[in-house]
Amino acid sequence: MQALNHAMQTLTDALGSALERGRSTGIFALSHGGPGSVPALADLDMPELHLDLLPGTPAESVLMVLGYTRDPGGTFVHPGGWRVVVAEPGQAWATDQAVLRDLLLAVPAAAQRYRAAFVQAGRTHADALLLPAAYTHHAHTVGFAPALFAAQTLAPLGLPWMLAGGWALDAWHGAVTRPHEDVDVIVPRQQQDAVREALTAAGWRLDACREGAYHAWTAPIEAPDHQAHARHPGLPHAQLLDVLLTDFGDQTWIYRRDPRVTLPLAQARLIGAHGLPHLAPEAVLLFKSRTAGHDPRGKDQRDFAQTLPTLNPQAREWLAGTLRLTSPGHVWLAALEGSLP
Image 1 (cartoon, rainbow, N blue to C red):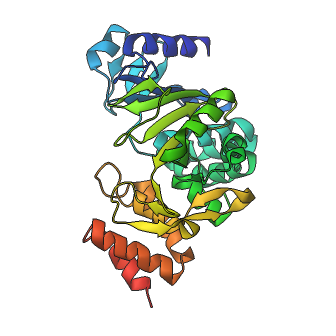
Image 2: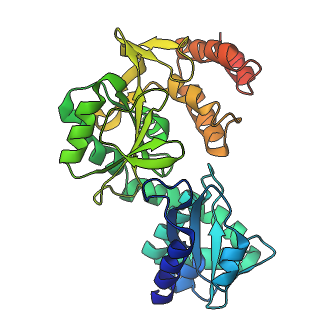
Image 3: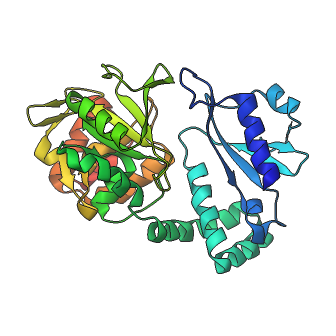
C-alpha cells in the first residue's frame, strides 16, 4: 500500500493536477482499483491505479521516465508490481470498479465468488458476474447519502434548486439504481450569489469551470459559462457537487441547450425520494440524449430503457416532441413513438 501511495504521488508530480486552478491538463481523479488491490484476492492479479486524466491518455514518454511500459492491453505496467489504467472519458467503468472493490473488501463471500469466477473465465467474466451485487451493496450502504449531504446546505436557502442527471432519476424511481461519480444540482442563475455564499460558509471549495480550467468561484458566472464544481471533505462517496446554473423565466424552466424548449416550473421540479427535489425525468433524459455532441453513452442508454416505462403519456409526448425539434432522427424516437397511444 505504501508503494502504491508513493506511485500516486509520483504520477501527480509528473502529470500535474487538474484541480490546480488555471490548469487545463492533469489528473482529475486517481484511485486504487482492481482485484489485486483487495487483500483476499491479491494473488489473482497485480493492483491497479485508475487514472482519470484531462484531456485523455498521458504521454507515454512521461510514464516511461517513471519506469512504466505499455502492455498489449493498453495499460501501463510498473516493475514495482502495479499497473495504471486510464479511464475513458464519459464512461462508467471507473465508477463500477470502485463499487465492485467496495463489495469485495466488505463481503468475504463475494470475494470468494469472485475468485471462483476469475479462475474459471477471467476478470471480465468475474467483474460482470459480481457487478449487480456491487450495485445492490452500494444502494444499501451508501443510498442517497451524497444527495442528502448536498441538500443540507441547499435546502435552507428556499430556492428552486433540484437534483439533475442520474441522481434525479434515482429520486424519481425512489431507489439508488447505480453509483454516481458526482451530485448534479440545478440552481437558478439569477440566485447564484446566495448559493455560492451558502456553500462557502458550509466549508465547500468552490471552482468555476471556464475554458477547460478551474478558477476560484468568487464572482457571478456569466453566460455562456454555466458550471461550478464544489468539493467538501464530508461529501460521501462522490467526487464533487456539480452546480449547474440554469435560467428560469416566469415560473418556467428553460432548457439550457435550446431556449425553445421549456416546461412550467411546477412540471419541471418534482419532489422524490427523501423529499429531494429533482428535475422531471423527461427533461433529464433530454439532457442525456446527447452528451458533448455525441449519441447517448452506455449508462444514458440504460437510464432511458429503465425510465421510459415509468413516464406518463404526456411526458413521453413532450420528450418525443423535443427530440424531433432538437435532434431529428434520434435513436430514442422509435421507442418513444412506439410507446405512445
